Length: 291
Image (cartoon, rainbow, N blue to C red; front, side, top):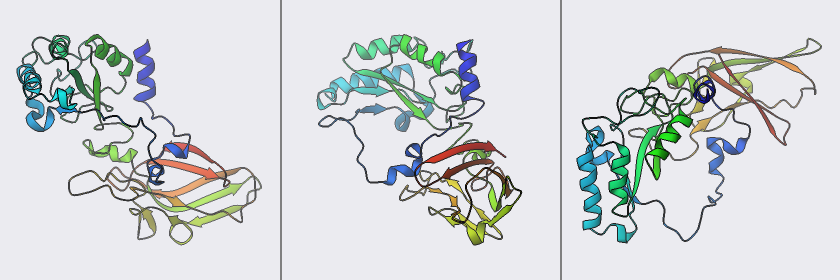
């Protein structure tokens, strides 16, 4: 039953953003991250760049032995992290399992081998339905089940990737997932008050675009959303998101119905996920909808 509950929350709708402080573009306020001072970050080695999905139990053990031989542990390197390509391509009875040819002894035995050398063992998963290399064993919808597995295997560290996530897929490994990252192209917004009076706002003439990715195309404002600046040839410098805002100085206080004229799609720049924030200048109220 616990798995069903998790599935309903993470596979059927995303977590709502209730505060502006948790949005991507809130991290450009030049406020230092409040972490622990005078300590090293997690330091170690990850298998991906060396072996990709071709890593094996034997190679992982060899790297653990090499850590000790080179005395990397004495320099502060303590984590040995196993990346993509280690699991079966499908879940077995809803659980993650080891790929039997490459990791015949299982992950608990491998963790024991690494711990016996005074090192810490890390593994890999993804917040989406699939791992980045494609295996359908992402942790989305199985968060509680996988947490038990990693505990049983005595895992010290977890690298979590962002492929095939249903609601925000930064890598667009599944192309149509862009519909959850970008808003539709917006042409017009109409507010209708309780008295029937209408306020019509043209996106191009009346709207203000924030960030550096949204553009005017014909009669629409498009590319509204969060741009992934970490793909090939792109460096994440500056605001990676764009919004379309309207200043309603002449609107009376009250309850309004909101109508949006839009063009939707499933591609980078034009999506189907609309997030609306309303502010009186002191706080933001959000609501989300799929178009």
